[in-house]
Length: 312
Ligand SMILES: C[S@@+](CC[C@H](N)C(=O)[O-])C[C@H]1O[C@@H](n2cnc3c(N)ncnc32)[C@H](O)[C@@H]1O
Image 1 (tube, rainbow, N blue to C red):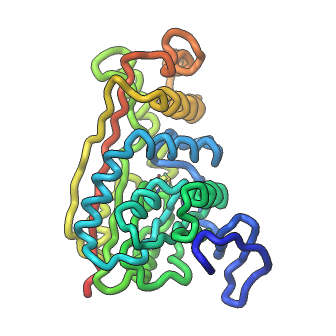
Image 2: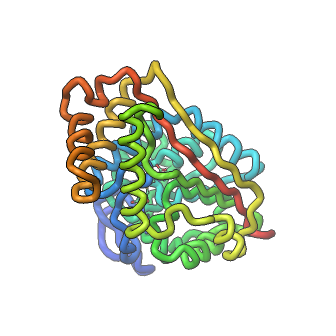
């Protein structure tokens, strides 16, 4: 199938289901909740999460360009086929297509809504021929994907039920000598200045969310270096970066903070006290404390990355 080509029809011989979403579909999906690591997650609709992912990509675009640039240096020449594992709306896909102008990307996600959005964006940007969307549970392997030069997994591995099985699938999809780049975030970004009452509220919320995520996504915060090595993917580089945006911020920052705090408010019902819930309400109620109107907003996020290679 041509990359980005619209498909219609029936199950094909190899078990791939072809349908109207403009992408391939394969197998059942994992038990993940479809929620995100960039924003508050619980209760996120696919549309809401998709907008959060797009805002994150827009705000941190220079950082993402720098990060994918470093990956390009490690990957070396001759990268033709890239896999974006848990692609979401395609922040990694599009950054990588720019870094590797002759490569094509297979974007793998279990969410048809995410893939539809990614395919539409690719088409709008004239990149449809270089992108193939594959709907699959990446936790069970990467069906039909072989000889990838580079696999990129950003904020997605912690969603998978069984990282060992998933990483075995990644190893099988990589060509010998191929590179796996993993990026993980430290949860939702922080938006309020540290030190004051608002920052203290945000810190309490993050702690409560960490408890929630520990129950629902036990692999969040895992030492991926150890897991990668155990999967036969020795780590070549590991680094932690603190990304921080300060005033003057683009308008999208307020919208991003608003969407995240809306989700946090929903997720923390019954998990923090009534005063904190009321304070969270004031961050999204359109009043003077609303994050869309504040001039003290920041956007802070810590990203940890690992680059590992399948031995040649
Ligand atoms: C936090 S988002 C990250 C999206 C994108 N990589 C980025 O950095 O913006 C996690 C993505 O992983 C996808 N995902 C979760 N579980 C998955 C699974 N078992 N197989 C494939 N994709 C999965 C979700 O649908 C979501 O799009």
